[in-house]
Length: 236
Length: 249
Image (cartoon, rainbow over all chains, first blue to last red; front, top):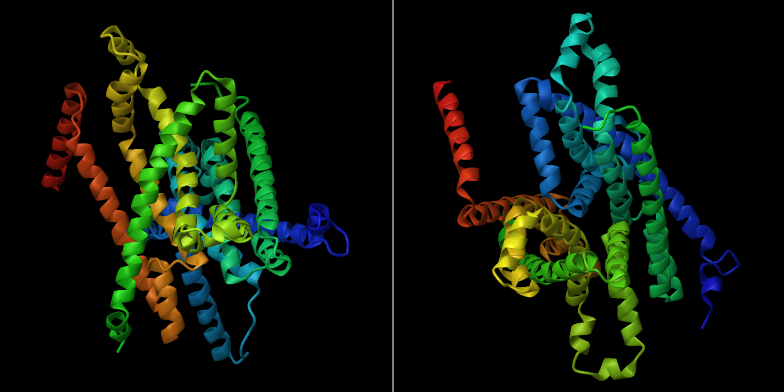
């Protein structure tokens, strides 16, 4: 029976470096997908709030679909359809078969899923802005993106913060689903380690502990951020 | 010939649907029972019990469900396999099957997530109603069964609908440990017919239908439970105004 430290530590037989690399990939995927999801969410939220009718309907349909279908199924679907489509595109362009970068695909797929949830959070946060603020900005001659950047975004950010922090923790947890399509993030590495050493419980519990560490740290950080954001906002 | 495989694999897909529904039902019922215990433990005056419940909630909510499922299935499963008495017992056929591990993982997860929800609902019940129940001579357990829980559950019905949809989506993870649920059946079809994504699309449509059915059921339940009158009247008037406005356009 090998000791725990031999298995998970940084020695010759240890899986420590591999697990840490997996943790890094998990963070990369989560961070990239968070940014992608935020962009998609902002776009979908503005489409829902004041886009042309077909665009608003499309955004609503996208949100409903992404929230009703299991994430795992969406990931499989987007992964296979996406990689098939891209391969066909490259073949048509004459590049032949291209090996897709797993991390990039994971970021795109998770970003698309998160965008649906983010759009609802942003929609609520934007609707919570007193309309007089927007009118005042219009009266000063602001419009379009300038108005969004200078007035809408700063006023809505504190409203959206709690929801987005929640979404970030969910994203870290959802990134574990990417291991099913074989990107070498934390859970996938743990699975490999468990399979090759046959110490299943050890490695899955270690992976769970690392994920727990990430989410606890994220919660502490978001709590600090929210207190900081709300410093000058009068309590309602 | 696109619909050819649907007919060939219809029975497999239907069995998968049955597995998904049974997973949903079993883990919803057991999970809700655990959630009640977790919520009551969180509000307990015994500090140790309250802290233990908090730790359980925090750990389950802070780790991915897939990791919990792997820990249950591979971790506990390999642990059980090392003990010959367990291997030779009558329980072994059940312990070898992935179904009960996924139920275990889902029940734990529902217990933690819904436990928080239930705690919020229990806190939202007005104090005065509990005091009134106590004034009628009900002791604490009777107050819980007759007044506190029914009121909290009525308040929570919309949230519980959302949680049930989340649970439905979580059951799809059963396919990762070789349980043939709806998604697992789609994966079998994909492997046998070399269709890349068509079975997944079909199954996605079924999940969307199930989601709408769940929400419809909870809507019926909400309408079936009586609420106090003064909270009904304004809502119905608002509905009438809404209807009028629509009719004019």
